[in-house]
Amino acid sequence: MYREPEIAEDTRARMLAWRRDIHAHPETAFEEHRTANIVAQALRLMGMSVHRGLGGTGLVGTLKNGEGPGIALRADLDALNMQELGDHEHKSTCNGKMHGCGHDGHTAMLLGAAEHLSRHKPFKGTVHFVFQPAEENEGGGRKMVEEGLFNLFPADAVYGMHNFPGMPRGQFGIRTGTMTAYLDTFEIDITGKGCHGAMPETGVDSVVIAAQLVNALQTIVSRRTSATESAVVSVTQIHGGDTWNVIPENVVLRGTVRTLDAAIQDNVEAMMGQVCTGVAQMSGASIALDYRRGYPGVVNTPGETVAAVAAAASLVGSEQVDIDIKPAMGSEDFAFMLQERPGAYIGIGAGEGENPHPLHNPYYDFNDAILPLGAAYWVALVKRQLAA
Image (cartoon, rainbow, N blue to C red; front, side):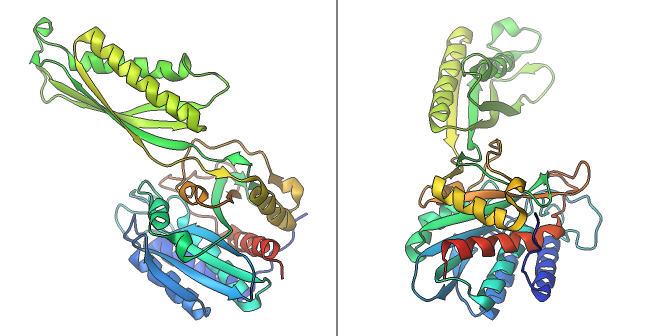
């Protein structure tokens, strides 16, 4: 069962225009001034009050219709620092920046829902439309929360949505509990004793020690974490040395850790410390681990997940809503909002044909065909949670 979304044709046209304009003019973390201006102007034309500057370039539009509870709906504004390689009329005009994750579409869908709701007001209560900066790596969601998002805009629950190119258009995916991974990063500074490359016995070889450490870190997942638990430890950078015949004094390793449970996160951090200490003692080098907690996991609360499932099913049928989707090892700073309020984060299928370009791919482009369905999901959720 698929019911055509109730979004009016003029709203659909505006969503398409907003999406493609924002795509052509991508702005990265905390620099989303033009994008925020477009959103603010659109919300004001809908008759909403708009609060700007929260989280730097973030903004919140508020729509109130009588007395009742309040909920918050969130979309992200920022693009990625990557070069777009696709070829279409709305291709990025900013060298080295592109909307490679679909935040342009997320923004357009939430604006479309805001326009529909402001016209018809099929609810009683308050809806806060939260447009967040800097989701990619920089924690704009955390900054909005720290600056008083839910004190300024009280909400009983908060909801988010992301496009999934790997899921067919017309489907949704969600789960109760952990939806995305906890994201941490690390830097390991190895200090040995530099020496001539022809006489390694006179030094402490930081390069060899780095290689040993890379291998040893992998045993945390393969031999010290249960096969029924999920963890990823990836060394993504190795820096050291300046010339061919000198063994360097220092080598630096950097990388990322992903887990799906806070207890596993704690265990991995502790085991990384143990591995570094052990390799240092064995090799005679000094090894310093700098482990940095990043984004927490997105953890959907039960009641709000049920509401999200019901809203999606009202549009596409329950058979098209996967209620036990596999958790993703990617991360999402919507998690900071879910630490403050109950809520749910859902995936909307955007796949079309075989082998669609994935997120963060230089040829990726948001699937405009899902704009009406995404807006209709937000409308259905509001109607359910703020029943008139």
